[in-house]
Length: 463
Image (cartoon, rainbow, N blue to C red; front, side):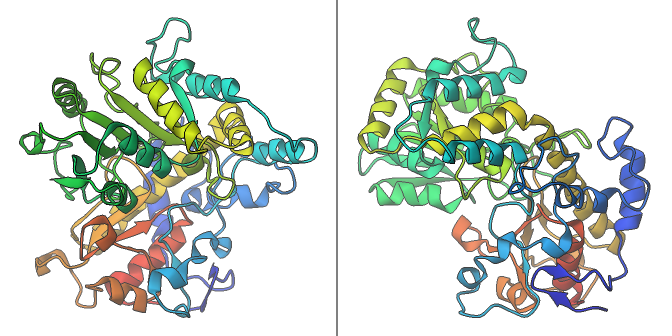
């Protein structure tokens, strides 16, 4: 077969692919309401990743109403930029497949580029657009239900605090409401920088294990909660497992934290990628949003427009939602004192995305839904039963490379370590920084042909 370039497969020669078989299945099951319903069999999964690149680009002032936003496979290059950091080597493997860094192989909605370009051509002084940002956030959450009468949204604009980044907001929350030496509850495995915030503030992590099984209940061992902890830091949906805790489990966590005066800090940046209902992707509601105690509990929801709209380089604004007025005032003052407010341009990006990016995001979610289902289809087709999960949210495959159950594999050449994957040019993310040695995280926000190549290499050493 044809050689792989650093950008992915060449257009000249393609391998024998399962995608046409997957397309027929997906097309039949997704129904007439899916954005792919009018795409002919054999093209559904691939066409959705080509559309945005053939439309006007961000730099050309592209229209945000493009049908679907996924990337052409021979342009799947955005995540090869950190390959040397992932491998620890100065050179990268031949024909790498970059599936590590958590961004997406697609340009953001064109309307965001237009808004930023207009601002950069006319404004360079200080600006205060926080009220517009807070209103945009409040309006974005309206579909999740009514709670505040003045906004018809579960989020009041008065509860919103603009912040420079999600991790800096978590760090400031711990500095403001906790003390060195305090015990901080955190799930494991989870996003490494959250745990680093705990350690760097001289606090003690109290680990609470979360199942990595795709068949596990969407809950945690509530008996592991620590009533003497000062805070609980949650990545929800969880990165890397994609876990979305059940409403009942969320209610019990909120109740526990309220009863014991424990601060609850939630990193919810992956919440726009919910896949609990096949073929019907949607946002994951705010953590504990169904709890009767949500507004009374000391909770800080942290989110960002960067993850959902692929704006890490701008970056798009991050923000905290703090329902408790006293806590909100303390937190906002701490952010301001450290000069960690969201920048003017980042807020412009947020306003543009939340005002005009809904259709783009919906199409993106359907493209990722296809890719997630393709992973299951691939394993079933080849008779493989690896220890893996996609969770109920996010765009990650979380794969156990060191499973001791050899019967799970219908092959003898599967890569059984992260280094073996690197040697085959599959550049995922090592599970060790998440607290899960022997696992690999693969980013699925790319052309499905790249996913198929990666799985072929991992399980069959097939190039």
